[in-house]
Length: 250
Image 1 (cartoon, one colour):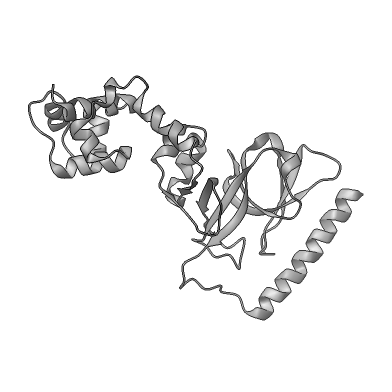
Image 2 (tube, rainbow, N blue to C red; image 1 turned 30 degrees about the horizontal axis):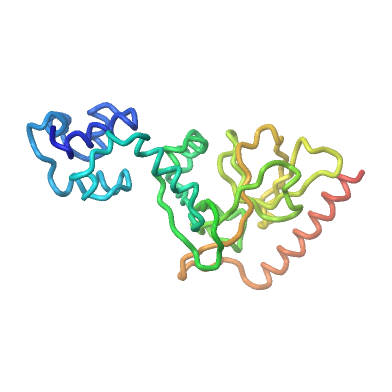
């Protein structure tokens, strides 16, 4: 059996895709994919390039290496190599992938399919980057990318710092977190734009917490606020935080 044809079938089954689903992702007819898998036709170069990008495997491996004959699952072996790496890895979650992320945030195969990048100012580690939408955190503009590291639980939250908070109801939001001194069961999410009201979230509803390490914006993105407006907003935010702290203590 042709190695490349066998590999196409193996990779498809590893993802649990039907021939129709895989063919749709490749932009070809199901019958043509069937012909590839049954060795009635050889995959075109552009198809191999798509498969290479999709599974992050070289074209040479597709053509010459029997991926299914490995003692360990090829995708799992690649994942373990990635986890054991001391290099930096930043997985990027664009706005268009936000809905899928809520369902697949804990699915290693879903995360594997997202693009990754690196930043010179960050050390080795496993980071995540989220593209934000909206004006609730101005002067951080809509379309900016927040690069974060994972935080596990209430104890690791630093009061009044910025986080990406993932909840099933609220989706993915970028907010400043204010902790309650009385209860570990909830947190208050505060926007830097005072036009947005703070709101409380139960910790049991939080799927993930990511503390921000860096903000990446396009060079031509400009805040729509004047310096005076920004100064006024900061002053009002400080007043809001003071009031929240007073309420929490009371």
